[in-house]
Image 1 (cartoon, helix red, strand yellow):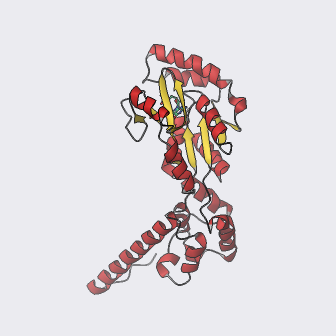
Image 2: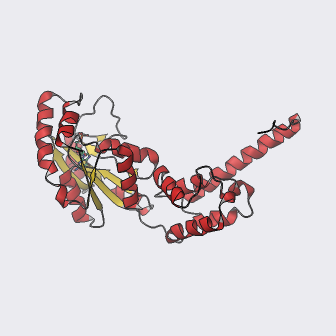
Length: 290
Ligand code: 5GP
């Protein structure tokens, strides 16, 4: 790279102003994509006449779409041979055509998202997978209500809604759960309205729940995709459960017995995935919802 051009103070402040305006314009476009007001087609059209849009990275455009997070955006770009730093203006004709085709189904009405239910024995690593998917933005991950007390590192409204037995009873009475179940002496339930709203917005939704709950979801919503996460081996599961510093010895023994019963439920599920490498599991789940 050559030496940067020498700018007068006026030229520098003009350049800074222009960069700030472009950033604002791109943020505005991304918000419009997120709200569903702009489709991929609209943005590609705009890029012909609007320099700020033309300079937007393809990755930014894709990640702003509902139902597309970092993982899906990356795999789509790999499929179409688009380099990770490519800007919209740098797209080839074939890539534009393929992008349009990929998102045509979303262009007029919001397509409801896919509901994916991730289940499996306690200790198999469901919550690690769910955390990754929440971070990547590929799924809207439901927050359950539970009567269990919070562990040290857990936050109300983020990990769970920690509620009393009485409140849980009220929620059952008012039909507020899509499913609920008892597990190891506590109750857990999925708030239905939040899940329904996210699906209606076109988000792909992930529920990370135990097996009875997964079966209930399938009864209410047969279109839900049920995924069973299996440990690489029984020994691996035992060592993960034994290594949990958060549970007492009695609770760990109970969880081990439960896990044995839970492993037998795999056949009920639409897909069984072995949790060997988290990134691989994440990519498989994203492709199931695409
Ligand atoms: P933990 O107490 O370790 O956070 O969770 C215990 C079990 O409850 C895990 O298998 C977890 O997947 C499950 N679980 C969490 N939230 C829900 C829920 O809303 N419904 C059901 N049925 N199970 C849940």
